[in-house]
Length: 606
Image 1: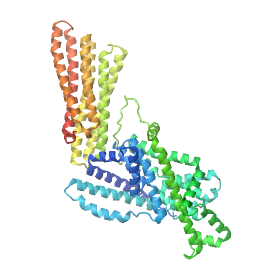
Image 2: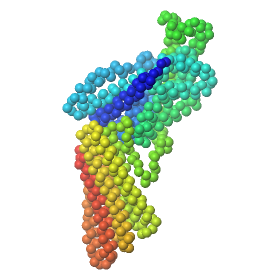
Image 3: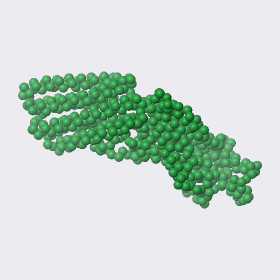
């Protein structure tokens, strides 16, 4: 086999075409579907069984578990799909990939995607010149889809041609009689071959050649097929490297699903192989285990015929050729049955353990920083496979995380009001609030910069309006954080002045904090699901804002009376009113966020 540097560069170009096709397809799909995409995915993965069916159908249609799982990884990376939903789809993808093996086993061919790729591009290009942005987006989606499959086809063309060079595996014949150790060795061979060529169909073909030459028995061929299940996880793992933690966990879940399946299969390997041999014979497709004995017996009794068979030189009418063809079909059928039964049993076991899988991958792939004080954007990432419309969904989730972090600052500010002056508790709370405020500033900049980068991409008009609204929301949330830190500064000035708050002032401040925290919680409900804004939530937020304003006015009027009646001193009243005004200002920023959500999502208010 002569594999040159030019072939290697062509392979890299094929991978690049595949990734570019994925990007263009994602962008086109998101712009065509808009905000409906999340609802579509949600409907497809409403529970673990619909998710499983989705994975089976998509993979059966596109005949590539690698392509379908890479798409799932990119959706999780965008926050459009949860880790639990993605697990069910990936379980289904493993069953769907057996569809291709059955087509090859029963009909002897694989669907040639090149037949429809160029006609699809011919139909898509005119759509790019339409005035309708939706039609343009559909055209981009189709072209991206074609590029993706062109890339996959070219990857198969430019990887080292192992299938046409079976002599590379001839040395394995010497390791085929070591019992269970041989099973483990050929399992590893299956992993390596599939990881390189990224095609379980090609692995099937190589195994069939090895069986035809009498190098390996049917059980070792099953071990290679078992290993191919691990090999197919390499592409999603590579795709997740540029994604966020959720994407990495999804790819890890795909690996663990196959790994756990292989562990239980190895524990009952020989009985499980025997079961598939019996099923194949029961279906009238012959004994797949008979080829190894037939070929080796032919080599011992008729070396000349064996050499002609191995060299593909037997005449077409030779009776041995017809016998071998029948046994080849039996082996191919048996391997397809083994692959299918393995994945079906695996899914039937693992589908009930989806929650456990999520917990395991969360342990294996933890978030980089656990402490709240660490600066970390949870959902936003610069992944290669992400696209502008998907990035908006990521930013939406990041906004919710940002708001939750700022909400904790309100609790800290209230605790600081009650902390003993010049105590260690006061110093620690003040330092923590100061650090949170710094983190808040950095998060605002990071999210705003990210949204600005999204705005530079190709977006639908609705997407552009969405980004403008989110930039406004980010600014308002950061203002709430500034007010929390402002409250801490007021308490520092009060401390330096030697002023004390009496129980009445403290009780009034706590009441104001309680109203503000309720308003903040209502705002978080709206930010947490901006796709389904409820009218009742908006009305409740406005009512709470009026209550905060009325309370501020009430306290302001009462403050003058209290000072005149010498209930507390004038300077205490000044600091008290500064804090009350600061809290009322936070309520204004909260209602500004609600206004933005109401105006931007008016058509989706329910």
